Amino acid sequence: MNARGCFLFGEHMSGTITGLVVQEKNKERVNVFLDGEFAFGLTMLEALKLRKGQLLSDVDIARLKGLDEIEVAHERALNFLSYRPRSVAEVRRNLVEKGFSEEAINTVIARLVDAHLLGDEAFARYWVDNREAFQPRSAKALRFELRRKGVPDADIASAVEEVDEDSAAYRSARSVAKRHASADWQTFRKKVGDFLLRRGFQYGTAKDVIKRLWEEEGGGSDRRDPGDDYSDNE
Figure (cartoon, rainbow, N blue to C red):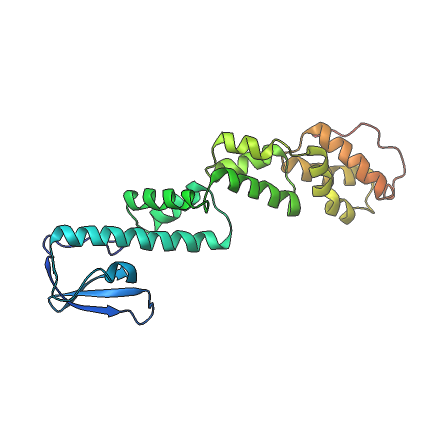
């Protein structure tokens, strides 16, 4: 890392280890002192391989800092994933913003994928399942959202292939229909229809769902048969 982090070092930093001190705020990390001055931090696992009086060359220090960058990036990525599943692109973007090198980022992502902690196919399915449960969307809207997350088209297609548009539209619009249950047909039709169209549902799907919800809500104050006069162009 450069000005964004702490992993780059000066032109000449070789020296003798004069101290290996466990950090006060993180007992899993150790501060390494060279020639009496703080040089860099390491994980406890890597620090256990060192000893006082050991001479470290520039190459040694570069290797140790590279290893530590990977470990720090890995911890950052795990923390980022702890809130909810993420796409590979999201994790990569987050680590880039934190200032980690491309080499460290690639290593961390490969490690997470190998450990089944990160994967676009699983993320896409999680995203669709979550939307289906709490905020149903059309397959079109889901595809758009997943593309914005950087998910490859093949994984998107697999995740949305079983989305039931009619069911999703109905579940999505129920709360809107209840809010406008006392409205006349024209108002009800427009409010529910606009809501469904904004969520990417097609005209035919929206039309059928609107009529179904209108009938379930008792037809509001206008008891006439709405027929098929709904149009998204009105």
